[in-house]
Length: 105
Image 1 (tube, rainbow, N blue to C red):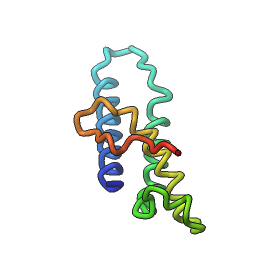
Image 2 (cartoon, helix red, strand yellow):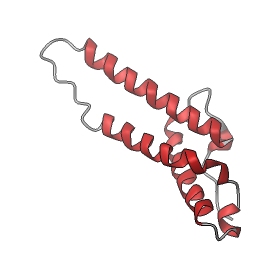
Image 3 (cartoon, helix red, strand yellow):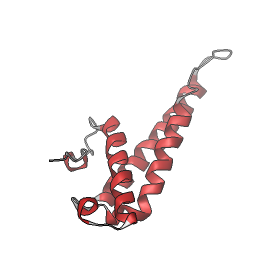
């Protein structure tokens, strides 16, 4: 489940970067394209996703609540962040409902 989420987010970020390059290259000469915050935002989402990838296998429902293992807690926290960030793409046909952030009881 989490591998699919990671692949989905990475693919969407790659597509977003490609689209930014295309928009910038299509702008008429001497046109100022304001994308100052877009690339850093993509970089930050990618950084969180990259931190999550090595521990994603530990991110299972209720594991953080029942485990005293630091890595399981780290995985749960990073997983929550990636699921929240992935909601940007919730209208994409490849987005899966099971990736929505988990609700706490």
